[in-house]
Every structure is written in C-alpha cells, then in structure tokens.
Image (tube, rainbow, N blue to C red; front, side):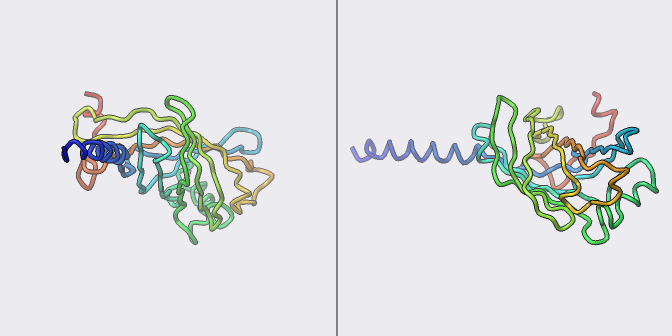
Length: 208
C-alpha cells in the first residue's frame, strides 16, 4: 500500500526531472558563428563588414523556448571591411572605439516563440559603454548531430537593425547612414558532446 501511495509523487518527480533535462547548455562556436553588417555609404551603395563572435553560452529548450537564454561576446577589434584603411577607421574613436572597449556583449532577458521555427530574443546590447534594450528576431535552423556524430549542434539565423547614433557613433552623418543592418549566423555546440575545442573541419571533409 505504501508503495502505491508513493507512485503519484514518483511520477511528478519524473515530470520535473524531464522538464529540467530538456533545457540544454551550449557554447557558441566562434568558427561557425559570425556577424555581418552593412550601412549606407553616401547613397552610392551599402558597405559591408564582418565581426567575430568570440565566445558565449546558450541555453535552449526545444519544448519551452521561454526557458532559453543567450550570453554572447562580439570581438569589435576583428572588424573586417575588406580594406585595411577602412578597418582602422571603423575601429577608431568616432565609431567602434576599440581602444576603450574591444568587445560588445549581448545578454538576453527572455525568449519568445512566435512560430514553428521563429521567435524573438529580448535582451540588452552593451556597445561603446551604452547598454540598451535590443529585441532580435531569429530562426532555429536545425538542432542535431553533425554528419560525423561527434557532437550536437544548434544553428540559428537572426537579423536586426541598429541605430548607431544611440550607441554614440554620431560622426560622419553626411556620409555614413544611421541605420545599420545586422545579420547573425550562429552555431552552438551542446555541452558534454565534444571536447574543449571543436574538431578542425576542412572544406574537403565538410563536403563529404
């Protein structure tokens, strides 16, 4: 009889344990994660640049996105505009100002699911000493094992528009646009499914 009375409590414990286990921890993969941005250049074209996501952590629950979170660091000194002189100018005090802070950081406060694969991350972007709320629409591309089965990866795409003036980048108003379009492509490796560093993947190996 006493075992029968315990069954509902054991079942409840199983539900709680299962819900907790569904929220997986990941680390962002800097090799397969990137930030691409563009901005108007005098109305002639939009200049493109690229930044590295140097590190970060991710928690993702496929069944309940509200339990998910992200904390990512962007290496501002890695900016690549395709020209050494332009790279130096963008790193300068009037724009990214990497002499004072070489990184930016995005930390989520909540995550919403809007569709089967789409949602919005609510959080704060700290850039050039300005910490401002930023909502980022994103898409879950795939969660699964790599083709070699070495580790489990979660892949995401996102895009957002930033107003550079809000982060203190007010110079060159007559030649550089205020709105900066940003795209993020992110892969994250689930904790416990790989070593301390992802294995080197050559283009030839990836194509097999």
